[in-house]
Amino acid sequence: MYRGRFAPTPSGPLHLGSLVAAVGSYLDAKAHHGEWLVRIEDVDKPRAVPGAANTILAQLEAHGLEWDGPVLFQGQRDLTYQSRLNQLQEAKLLYQCDCSRQAIRARSSHYDGYCRNRQPRTAPYALRFVNKNPVTEFTDRAHGLVTDNAPSVREDFVLKRRDGLYAYQLAVVVDDIEQGITDIVRGSDLITPSFWQLTLWQEFTGTQPQMMHLPLIMNNDGRKLSKQNHAPPVDSSQASNNVFSALKYLDIHPEPELRHGPITDLLQQALQSWRKKWHKTGR
Ligand code: GLU
Image (tube, rainbow, N blue to C red; front, side, top):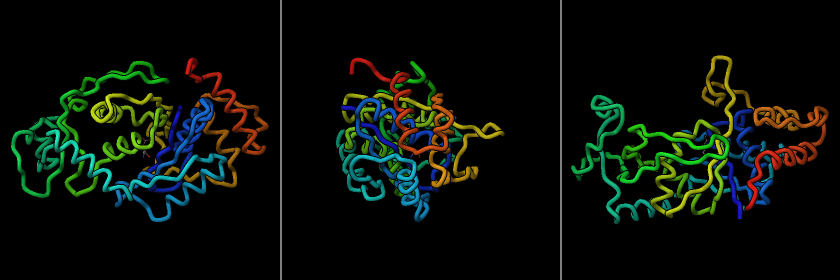
């Protein structure tokens, strides 16, 4: 059974760019009669803004995007992440690395495996994954075959940071696996991390989820709309108008009057269009 998710980082309220990812992942789950889960990605605790998670959840509700099951908070899952690391440690797929960013950059454009055979290092150290079988291609439902053979895709990436925090790459994969996610639908800014994530999926489960990366909204200066460059929050009192705008970026064009009608009518029509455009037949 299809199970998708929306996984915002609570570093601020939803803006139009994050609404595109929310709406796209929601419609794809519903179009496949699947479940749509919400996970708050507060694994990077210093980046989490107090109150942002509740604001995001309220914004989703106001935009008619009702999720299935309980919301998962990464900030409460250290024990789970640690037990996965222990599993990798036992399989000798983890090593300590105390290289500074500067030292890494001085040697190469990517991490060159310097500490692989130099254990143990002095604290504080990061934990790196022994990347023996890197995934360098996958088939994306929107982009087709995506390939990247860059040395950084093949490097021994970090699973626990030098500051003691679990890396996003680890948390997202452990959670997606545990939540039974079959389809990952999110913004195209995450295509590159997908290679590392699919490498971990392969290691933990021997399988991979289906990926679909959605268009990003760009600023006038060509940068991705994001909280970092002060994208304004979506106004919950304008839900239909906001979803209508988000749909335009997803190349879904409902009847114009729905921009001012009830959100349920708009989502219903969008769902029909999504199904025609993106339904995976034969599932
Ligand atoms: N938490 C990530 C973000 O807000 C999304 C991660 C994902 O969808 O895999 O950019």
